[in-house]
Length: 165
Length: 287
Ligand SMILES: Nc1nc2c(ncn2[C@@H]2O[C@H](COP(=O)(O)OP(=O)(O)OP(=O)(O)O)[C@@H](O)[C@H]2O)c(=O)[nH]1
Ligand SMILES: [Mg+2]
Image (tube, rainbow over all chains, first blue to last red):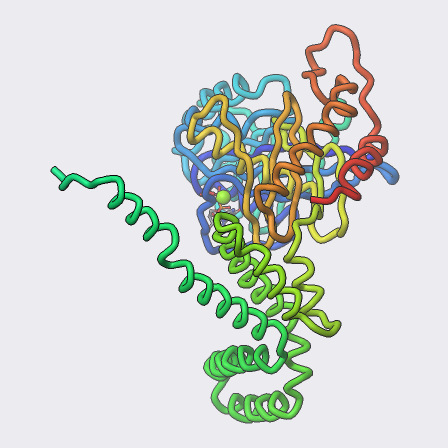
């Protein structure tokens, strides 16, 4: 049976939320930065096994520096969360653990992936000490530009959602 | 302080307000209807509307291609278009038709809303309207669509997540799962932004359609309506929705309760069953 799941993608301004979704859904990338206002919704059907698919309904939320201020109404009924930060801009991850705590208190008990994006600009290994110092653990390092690890990220999430149900 | 009016003065003023413009109004309405009829009945008029658009497109096209090649191509195109005007109109009609249709729909809505307040016009309007349309062509079908509201699509959506539970649809024009998400996002935004606890968004206008929303405890129903959606149609639609709710939805606990926290496990109704019921209640409904 085909099921549908609501995924919210959130994080600070300009970290690449929209770009990651665009890479995943249409396999394209643009250098043009178009700020997301409100929320943008797209869908992608992911094959879990030859006879099982899942529809991911992706809620691409507008970026915010204050995670607390995200509209609760957008988070209701969420089945999975992708939290994105920009590895080239410390301001997007310096309070990461606190941000994550806020999000998981608003959306408890759902699969939750932490993503460091823009690996085409800096190698994550160069930042290892920074992440270690701040006690940051990251599930995926991606590049929406090159497509690196983008599919892995979403298929991991899809698989977690299936085994959850 | 206003000068004192006696009863007679007041009646006069009231009469002025109510009747003075009636004749003029009637004429204006009749003129507008004629214009509308002409616009959509005569292809000639349509192609006149198309011409400036094509002209404009050609100019834009001209600017955007290299100068050497440009003039030659545009010249050929121009000639081609001049010779095969009908073919071009045909090609553009699906796009243009939509624009014209939207324009007409909007005009009709304005007109009929005005008329509703002046009942005597209603019969005049209907008569005029029927006699104006002759022959069988796509424009007539287009007008037929406009005259009465009709249900295009019904979506049963989970309120929180915006996940589509089941649907009934006359055409497969849009991705229902995505539309369900979008409607839910809009609904959440509006209800959240205006912070109205007990007020819910009731309808959304989208292109040619009006989308009527009815919330229940854990789910809501979105009905996509084309045509002239007025108060009487709205009342009928609400009756149908509540009938569907009482005779079907309310009997199925997973459609009316938060099942996650339920003590006993609740067996969900299969999607196919819900879709059969939706078709039964909404499929042949007349608004
Ligand atoms: N080099 C590089 N640039 C990226 C990458 N991902 C996104 N960008 C660029 O970063 C900018 C912002 O990307 P968006 O995807 O719009 O970011 P966002 O998180 O959706 O932004 P908001 O909607 O404003 O919160 C754009 O100019 C993108 O082209 C990446 O992996 N590598
Ligand atoms: Mg964005």
